[in-house]
Structures are given as C-alpha cells and as structure tokens.
Length: 504
Image (cartoon, rainbow, N blue to C red):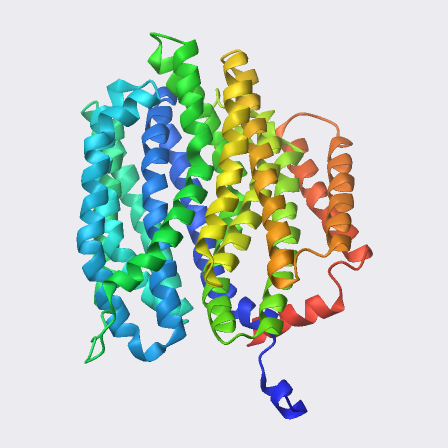
C-alpha cells in the first residue's frame, strides 16, 4: 500500500464515531424517553402494578429485542457486503418474517400459561397473551431498519429510533392512564405499546421500501445466518432480563399467596435495573455501528482494520461505560429517590453491584457483535451461554436463601453481575486468540484506579439528602475524568479523533 493510499483511508475510529454520532443521538433519546416512560408509569400505577408490568414486559422484551437485533444484523450484513442487492435482501427478509414472525407470535401466545406459571404469576396469563402481538409487528419493522443500517444510512436509522421512542412513551402512558380508569392499567399500557409499534412499522416501511429489481436473494440463506444471530441475540437479551424473571419466581415461592407483594419486590428491582442498564443502553449504539464495518473488513480480509476496530471500540466502551457506572454507584439511594416514588429505595444496595455487572455485559455485547460480524455467530452464542450458565447457577444458589426484601435484591444483583463478568472474560480470551486484539491491559488498570478514586471521593461528601447526593455523583464523575486525563488514558490523540468526528 502506498503512502497516498494510506492518506485516503478513513481513520477507523472516526468512521465508527461518525455513525455513533447519529445513532448515539437516537439511543440517547431512547434512554431519555425510556427513563421518562418508567418514571411516569411508576406514578400512574401503584408499585405492585409496576412490578406486574415489568415481569410481562421483561419476558416479551427477550423476544422483541431478539427479533430487533437478530433481524437488523442479518439484513445489515448481506446488504453491507453488496449495496446492489439491498432490495433483494429486503424482499427476502420480508418473506422470511411473514412466516417466522407469525410463528414466534403464535408460540408466545400459546406458551403464555407456561411462562406465567414459571414466574409463579398465573394471574398474569392474559397480559402475556396480549403482549404476543408486539414481536409480530417488530418482525417486519426491523427488516427496514436492517436495510438502513446495512447501507450505512445511520441518520435514517436514528430517525426511526427517535420517532419510536417518542410515540411509544406517549401512547404507553396514555394507555396506562385510560386503563387505570377502567381498572386495567397494565393492559392499557400494553395496548399503547402495540399501537406505537404499528405506527413505526408503517413509517419505516414507507421510508425504506426498495425495489428488488431483477436480483434474487434466497430467504433460506438469510435464515441460515439469522439462526446464529438470533440465537446469540436471544441469549444476550435473556441475560438482560432473566434476573427479574427468576426474582419473581423466587419471591413468589417465598411469599406464597401474596402475589402483589412479590410483584412489588420485582417493581423495586425493576427500578434498580432501569438505572443500572443505562451503560448498556448507551453502548448498544456501538454494536449497530461496528457490525457493518467489521462485516466489510472481514469480508475483505483486512486484518489490520479489524484489529483496529476491536481495540479502539472496546477501549472507548470501557471508559464511557465505567464513567456511567461510577456515577450510578456513587449515591444509589439519591438516584432512586429522584426518579421514583417513596418505596423504591429498598433497592439502593443492589444498584452499584448490578451497574458494575452491566458494564461487563455491554462489553460482552460489543465483543459478540464483532464475532458475529466476522461470520462466527455460534461462537458468540457460546460466550453468552457461559454468562447465563454462571449467573443462573449463582441465582438458584443465592437468591432463594435470602429473605424476601433488600437482601434478596442484593443476591439477585450479585449473581447476575458475576455471570456477566465471567462471560466478558471468556469473550476477551476469544478475541485475542482470533484477532490478536483486545483491551489494552494498561487501559484496564487505569480505569480501575480511576474508578476506585472516584468512589472514594464520593464517600467523602457528607450528608444523605438529595443535594449532597447529587454533589457526590458530580464529584465522582469529575474525579474519574481527571484521573484518566492525568494518567493520559484519554490523551491528545483521542481528543483529536473526537474533534474529527464532530467536524466531519
């Protein structure tokens, strides 16, 4: 390669960052509206109803998110490899989902009594059945999003995310409020959710519909790749929600005949999860951006580009994920008091534990997307399976032995976080063996030191009120940033790259 060729190649970090800006804005909107949605829903319904909504929503989210990520990645991969066949790939995706999407929705509807029985909440069977309509709608919507992602039309993909966030928040809360007047607030919330999904599906279809032309792309070929991608994303989304479902099972057994109390305990844990999952949601954007880039670099057998993507992406994700976890864990009681009504503070001790684990899960998700994009989706499946196996084993060991209350919440958070860490360490080992790249050890050390300094500084702030809590969180974030800058972990080269991204 000549020097002229090198100068014309885009900086790998800048290329990733350009997409991150668009989708990052969308995911930031998603996070804000998602938090607003839960914050307001907790004020429209009581604690037990909030817990009931959370149990059903977490179960259906495993299916929904699997369809979203699996379909987007599958359609995106084959579109990114050759833009000329984008229309043919889209048509193949729609044909496939006309069978697969219907099958998934019907299966969930029929399995509703079994799912409700597993979580010791048979009274919620009708809610599980109602929610079965959502994955059917998502099945078609995500084909259009996958087309936008594969064509690197990140601004269009971002517009869908923002529009859906706003529509879902408005209609879900309106449905809950109307349902509350009729005594069916949870059912009303899901009706609003379904309506929002229909709206965004129609909008995405209108915007991204492509003429397939004379090209042909086999739905079977798409299905073969999707099998691995869907299995992986199904497991990663199970890893995001299984702790809540297991908690409802164990709490239901411990509080036999007191279903509303078990729902209330899950409601508190859901508040903790909502905050702890912020690092994952913020970093999820990276998986959407890195996927088509790694698909293209591995398809072209450009090992240098692939190694650069792996190193830079994981390093920046660790820095920003840890920064968010530090702030979340500085004064958890204050955060719960700010965002939720009285009664949710019982989860304060569980929040820092779960937030730390979620950073590991976010990095595992990024690593899994890299592995999947390189054409090895079943390796990613194995990595997440390790996470689930470790976390579930610990959950069945620790959670039933804890008293139904704050102690059970801490046990659930600890077992889940440990499983996430085990899975991420396994992913790092594979990335190094496969690509010769991973997290720089010095970067990990500097982030750990910065985290310890930030947490220590936050504990020095006196007082337990909201003002003192906010001050402690701000101080923790500041100390973390200063420590990394002082250690030159985020140096002049990094700042130059980000300036290029902003001015591109």
